[in-house]
Amino acid sequence: MRPVLATLLGSLTLTACADHSASLQPSTDNTITASEISSGLHHPWSLAFVTDKEWLVTERRGTLRRLVDGKLQGPPISGVPEVAAVGQGGLLDMALHPDFANNQRLYLSYSKPCGEDGGTTAVGYGLYQQGSLNDFRDVYVAEKSCTRTAKHFGGRILFDDAGHLFLTIGDRGQRERAQDTSDPAGSVLRLHDDGRIPQDNPLTDQAGKAAEIWSWGHRNPQGLALHPQTGKPWLNEHGPRGGDEINAIEPGINYGWPVITYGREYYGPSIGDTEKKGYAQPLLHWTPSIAPSGMAFITSNRYPGWEGDAVNGALKLAHLNKVTFNGLTPTGEVRLLLEREERIRDVRQGPDGYLYLLTDSSNGKLLRLEPAQ
Image (cartoon, rainbow, N blue to C red; front, side, top):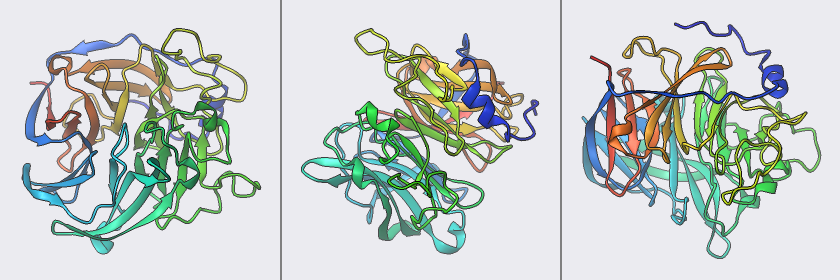
């Protein structure tokens, strides 16, 4: 295992007060290959492992698919909520409750129809058993985020080791919302598993604030993973033209969008400063953009020398992105599977320790990353 910080109790200072962010010179590795496990998935978004043999995949159009021994099974699973499958919206992420073996709760995030042709980010759960999903109910709906702009839903969900549910919400294409803490857009939320707000959230004692917010100043986070040593969430998020980021998330911290960013307007001009007092620097920024989506930390020994590395899907530059960290400092970046030229939407470490990837297309694939021979 590479050296890591024994604790990130000091990360608040390190991330909020760092002088600048890192942008690495990436290398490539064409010795790593991927084998195709399944295909025929329609813009898959998320992968979950029910057992060693039974896996689930969400498709953005609003369907939930089941695989057994890597083979796609029958028609889509019924019982999923209605989704606003327009633009970037649809059926998004998926997570098993930490006590899934006893309560069968399968959590889904999605863009929920609202207003007139609008949508907003929501999360809920149904009871999953033997290929069926029943009694789906919402636990959180971002009512204030309802808009007809069909983009920047965020939508990644994650349970921490204490059973708290984290949900990312993008700025919904209205960047100023990411700095408004009365509005959950552009934020990471922290909830109990039933949608209640934990009393130790950073804004619970502030009138007029959205108490579900854990951190804010985010543009569109689509990767979320627990750091294996600290148990705290890390995320990746889309910048505009450049300025994609990896951030280690701490409560009550403003991650800057759009006041600070390393990205630019799509037509060229700068958006804000790259650093400013009171706004956290990203641990890493990708400029030009890779369009990151999906995130995992490698904790198995399937890939010698990679333990502790963060892996991220890349949509724009169509590769698997691997970053090595020493504590909070990125020390190396490798781009894998470039020769496949496939957009990678999600990446997960399976029960067998291998990395599994979903490619984003109308004939999406489930791939397994093979170790170097």
